[in-house]
Every structure is written in C-alpha cells, then in structure tokens.
Length: 279
Ligand SMILES: [Zn+2]
Image (cartoon, rainbow, N blue to C red; front, side, top):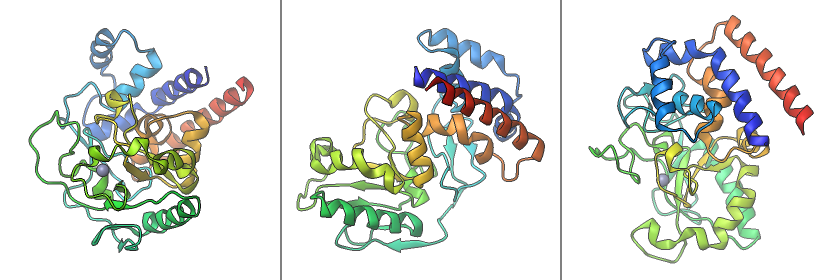
C-alpha cells in the first residue's frame, strides 16, 4: 500500500516534467506510442509502474538512444544501460583508499572515500570487515548489450568514483560471484546499516528488470545520507526507481527554469501531505 501510493505520486510527478525528459532525450514529449507498446507487453504493471519504466527508458534496447547526463558529479546521478556519463568523464578528486580496507591501488571519489572509511571502521567495531576489491575504474570496451554483469564504458557506476565491489578479505577467489557475499555477516551488516552512511545496494536480488543487472551483493554505491535514508523511509529498493520518482527533473537539467521547479515543488508538497495522511 505504501509503495503503491508512492508509485502513484511518482507517476503524477512524472506527468509534470515530461519536457525535461523529452529535451534530454531528443524525443517529442507526447510519445504515447511508447507507453502503449510497453503497456501491452507488460500487463502486470500498474500505470504508475509503467510511467516509471518509461522514464528509465526500460522499453528501449540497452545502449540505444541513451541520455547523456547533465550533472555527472551529482550524488543523484543515474548511470545505467540507458543513461551515460559524458565521454571521458573523470571525477574531480580521487583518493587512494586506506589499504587496511582495500586492495592496492583502489581509488574512490573523495566524499565517497571518507564516508566508506567511516562506515568500514564502524562495521569493524561490530565484527564486519569491509574490504574493497575494485573502486573507480573505466570499463573495457564491451559489445554485448545483453551482458548482465559488465557495463559498457561510460555506463558503469564505477566510473563515477562513487561505487565499489567488496570481497571477503583473506580469500583469493577470482570471481566475485564465488565469494557468495550474500551469505556473509558483512552483507547482513551492510543491509542493516549502509544507508546510515549514505550507501545503497545498486543491483538487488529480483530487480534485474529495473537495474539491467543480475544480483550483485558486493556492489555498493554512495548516494549520500539524505537520499539513502529517504529511499529506505519511502520503501524504494532500487535507486533508478527513486531517481525517476524524485530526482529526474533536477538531474536532467543543469538549471531548471523557475516555473518548472515551482510546479514540481508544489506537487511534491501535495504528495508529502497525502503520504503523511495515509500513514
Ligand atoms: Zn561493481
């Protein structure tokens, strides 16, 4: 019920910002054919869920007609098979991660690095040892659009410097899948506490249709405490859905015209009131 209400609110919000989406996408705003085609193929989805899916361009083939994001350094940036970083994007400040918590040479964006160390030290005090195998990186060229594990260059959260892959320390398995990280105490600790430090699981189990990737219990992404805790409080399990519902208008425009911001804000207030009343 809580989620259904939020999805309805999100859909209403999306209706008020089609211009932002259309301009970044280069498409006409009233593209009803897309909606109808996707609806016919996904009878199980509600109208609100369909609108979120279209905002995320899930009806498009992977890596086709992608949106290049305007604010690649924003904590609210969406990077997916349909949304890309500008060509050659490199985060402004990358830092080496303390070698007690990462393999040699691992780097993260400075703000993500500081938050990770704070989280790793807190986890360690409670017996969970967070250890990074891979942080900032630019993915190798890949020509398989259906690859559910490896993103194409410009489409990986790792390139933002805000994401990392964890492994269990002291083990030397090559494939992250072989660690079965989801069975570890570390994973359970992260599921309970990561959002308090601003981290979210990018590719949760059972969400491949939304994320485009298989379950990756080791891949965590920094979105900041405000977004992470708001996602938890509003019951969102994936960042893309939250992005489509609450961040899209802001993220797709470098400087939104005041008129559009005002209409979004007033709608947002109405949703918040309706939501509070329903609880
Ligand atoms: Zn990863």
